Amino acid sequence: MKLLRVGTAGAERPALLDRDGTLRDLSGIVPDIDGDLLADASALARVRAAAASPGVLPALDAPGLRIGPPLGRIGKIVCIGLNYHDHAAEAGAEIPVEPILFFKAPDTVVGPDDTVLVPRGSRKTDWEVELAVVIGRTARYLETAEQGLAHIAGYATAHDVSEREYQIERGGTWDKGKNCETFNPLGPWLVTADEVPDPQALPLRLWVNGELRQDGTTAEQIFPVGEVVRYLSHFMTLYPGDVINTGTPAGVAMGQPEPKPYLRAGDVVELEVEGLGRQRQQLKAA
Image 1 (tube, rainbow, N blue to C red):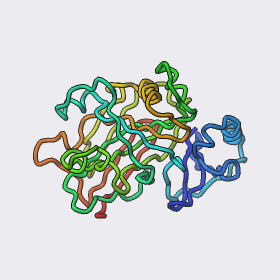
Image 2 (image 1 turned 45 degrees about the vertical axis):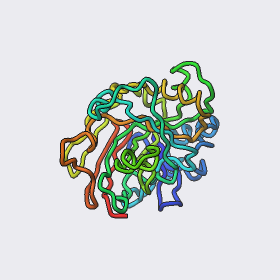
Image 3 (image 1 turned 45 degrees about the horizontal axis):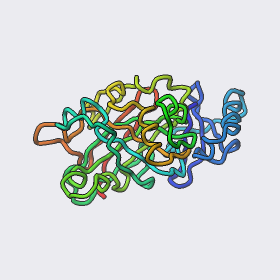
């Protein structure tokens, strides 16, 4: 299923994109798309049954309707740094022996086509297309990568916007270059795991002002998706509704020759993970 949330920011309602491409209202079946729903097999079964029954779910008038983040009440966002062989190479970094972790606050999440704000004084705002994983079952001390995959409810396209000066040059942790307002567009859809048979075979692409900047595949990941979930479960408990951003392929601004083409107000970024939907953001000054 392709689950999403539509409407004004803070007042989104649950919806579903059916196989014919029609947007359907789920608000009569479930209150929201969130961790509670993803952990409730009976509620998900009701959604599937309604989606398969013609006329049960009313169609929504899609044109002009804002698409919000596909997941509400996000618990935590755990991110994996330098998780692609080609990105580590362009950054001049050694291949990590263990996953590099940082966090994004849930309040960085916006809809896939919402405005992204360039922080005041920023000189090095950068782009990163990523595969996002959404947890559907509580995960503690998992033993295998296969168990990791079994705890995933679905997948989404994510934009891990980053400010490299704040991240790298200002000392401390990466987090302060990752948590600026609007720095995690998510969606448009939460695609349930049954529709993604191999998360290591997903092309990712990103364009800036129409120019292709990133063109990679999750096959390049150093730590595959299932292993990432397994690994994280030994350092923290993962709950339904938690999100994992699994890293970005080569092609970010930081990896380009001087002068590096960092983002500025007025730029337009478009990105997609194949099968998970496309985003488009115009940047404005904060």
